[in-house]
Length: 174
Length: 301
Image (cartoon, rainbow over all chains, first blue to last red; front, side, top):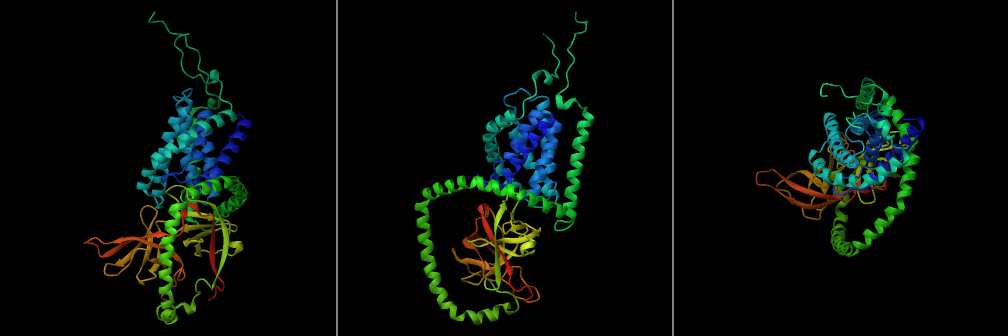
């Protein structure tokens, strides 16, 4: 990842984090909130791999925790793991698959919510499992709606890595 | 043929992934460790310390961006509210007429009670030594900067802090009713824990019948008036307000008389010893734009 890419990624995640905390967190639909930051992070991680995803997740989580005056490090922890995992998926199985962003967003939405639930539970904070489970389907739907435009935007902003550079698979023929 | 080795092109590593798996895992491990360290420090000293100060400064630095984002979104919110208002105007009109009718009845009852009120106040409350709501409180009006996101958070961030007089445990109200209490203070911002938070408890009373209980979070965004004995009487639509202080030795955080909500349903199971009273809060915790922090005019009282 180049320096320019890093700056663009930082700007993207910064804007997404601020928009999430200030605007999207007010949009409650059937108990769920659309997560523009998570979808942006997934798009970024798919395009830039696991290390970029982990660092981006940590940075984005820190911004969210600071802006919302939440427990510092809590969102960072979950988003770091989410970014890393999606980055690995992007580096290996998911690359060049058209459905990868949608599948990643759907899976990460569930894992992110469950991850937050576990961390809140461990910290003896409010961890309403019932409410989280009920809001999962609406959350997935909302995030999937955001996926196509945001992925296109992030892809436009961060040039996808060249195909020959990506080729880490063994070619048996031709 | 089968025994001969197949020539394979040498795989080119993934660009940012030219680093070894060890480095990749080390980066993640370090980030996770840093996150865990931050959580530990924040958890051990949530209201003071160096990290608290750094977070406060960071929040102050981010506020202009949050305000800008809110302003950008405001026209869209206004448009949505306008369309939503038009769509619900008929139902709203019907609801307001019903409320108006109830308020008329309340006004008649209140006129009756007004004459007895000063004597009852002396008997029931020891408020002479404590500030009374609203006359002894100063309202610090402020915008809400961030909102509860998802089911985990039941707090909001407000744009006033200790530098403008906000103190820990100050009650917070909106134009509709009680919102919560200040649970963390930074120089230029503060965190308000909402009354639908799991750890929140507000001593409350039914204004009509005088029945007392505690307001705790209920299901589906409602509140519950707990610990109401089964033999007590409440009515649907009764106004629930904060109960205030009864013993000068144990002053309540909330002064008497802040409206909380209305009784929406009530009932009791055969085996239960207390009534289940559901309260619909006046304040809409999901769309708080601005609130007022109540600070005693004379803190020494």
